[in-house]
Image (cartoon, rainbow, N blue to C red; front, top):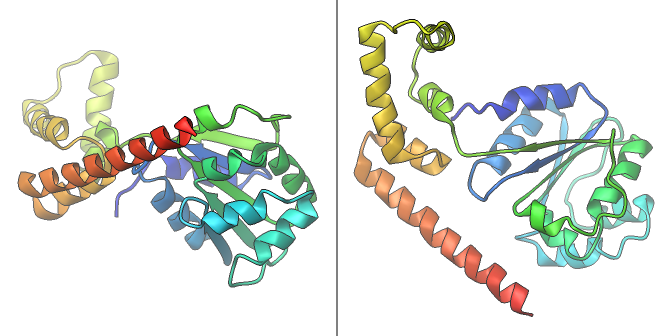
Length: 237
């Protein structure tokens, strides 16, 4: 299980009364981190992926107001919506955003106050161009990236005290202890080879084998090629 910095943001969001929108490239860990948090912190959790469920795009894009939106949503899920308890996670919303202004709708969903909302997607900077009214004060936004070096250190079970020591030396411009410096340089070299994509990092942590990392890299590359081809074809239509 990889610990991510987005978890601290999710704790802040939990204490707010806003919807949450997380952008980021594919396979950086958005869905995993958000699902894990929602399942651990809410007694009722609904998940809908618009990339996987094309019928959901058709159904939800015809909603005329928030009541209709929730009614339509209820036909696509297999569990009840519980007022005051349910968090609704709508994933890959760029697929819906091409046909329906989900961002503007989020304001009215939040104002209604019955449920909590998480939205996530890829390429949102491209897709969210026809938003009628950006819901300032109703939506918390963030972009998620691949693991940075500190997250890579966490994944490799590096003691927090060593990380804090390195950070303090950097801030004060003091030399780092040789044994810590050597350890961090070895890990940094590994980080340069592994990168920050969660699947590759997990392969490295689990197996300690760069051959396994290479397999993960090829899988990610193949997925991205297919994704690029799909969006290129969509934009030609």
